[in-house]
Image (cartoon, rainbow, N blue to C red):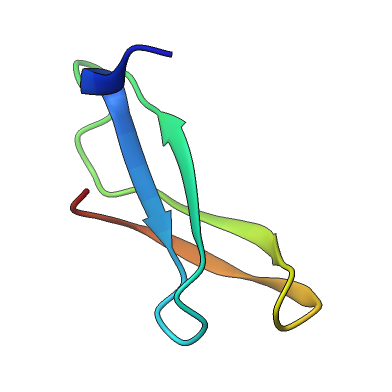
Length: 51
């Protein structure tokens, strides 16, 4: 993955992060995904934040 296209998805409570990419031409809103948290051992919402 190109480093300039990466976005960071963060869970605020645990501080965990996932990295992914998005098409900025088609998707203008902030991304939010339900992903698995290893610290909490359950699925929680990760939201887009600054790198």
